[in-house]
Image (cartoon, rainbow, N blue to C red):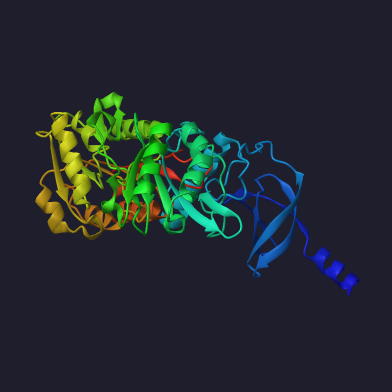
Length: 448
């Protein structure tokens, strides 16, 4: 019996030459008609693996030994790497991470859309550490272990017990032990599922999601913690719109971020969508406007405009900008920001479900010279379908498409190019989420 077990174990081990890296941070090898995935392995490495799971065409292995290491392998600095699911590429040199993402973008465009960009944009880099000023931390109490606060474990619904997080701002990372102690001492720690972080240029907000009412003592504990550590507490008893500050916030201490290049500043609620990486967002906006190149006589359409992250900078360069967004609350904050900057005469905002865009909606817009769109992961298929059906006289002369999902971008790009007679002039990645598999990209389309 023992000999049989040893033989079986030997048969379950093999050596693989890793050829690529998938967006979950797993090494990929092709051998004997099967695709093999190895967590922790990198392209160019020869590895010994064991304990396969899967079928004849796809197998997932456990890494046993690295027989030949990649020159781009680095020691992950985070002690939670491999357990926490927040980062999957810390073992790969950061510039090589960007190359992997660029290759994934190109492969997606080719495989899904049959497209190759005429020009590859230089990748946009940003800070690799302490960049994440938006985060949603899960809270979970484990019997016999106490409270856990962190991101989900890799490949699991369990919560990783974080003692620090190197992609969070250093002051926030340092708060994690004290935050755990605070929540454990509240009256309802078992009914607090998450804490959301939103950090602006001069304010740090923590939103406490609670499923039962907080006691007065709970609120006093939150206030004392806030005073000691310089954070604002908001409480959220229901959906995002139910979030409220625990105490009134003076205007000078409101949550906000600025885009100095365009002399604009945006105030927002901690549950509003904003980019996670503020430094890279500044580069994102700057590159998008440079590629779109709006003229002083041109009318621009900003789709999925949110708070006006692109709309207000565009209004500094174009004759007129129309921002379109599905959320009435975000549009109201965008209008307020436009008025605060004296841009109300050069902007207009309209509420619209852009996943149901149609030709009647487009015709009501009037003249549109250029389009910028920044959809969510679902992409902008309905918008692409409308643009693909326009006559030459009505077609925008340039489209800049900012995407957070290469597969839906490739689908929409195929509609624009193959059916809409557009050319894919340029494409490139922006590393807004270092050490993760998230790919942010920008593409440029012009009439063929």
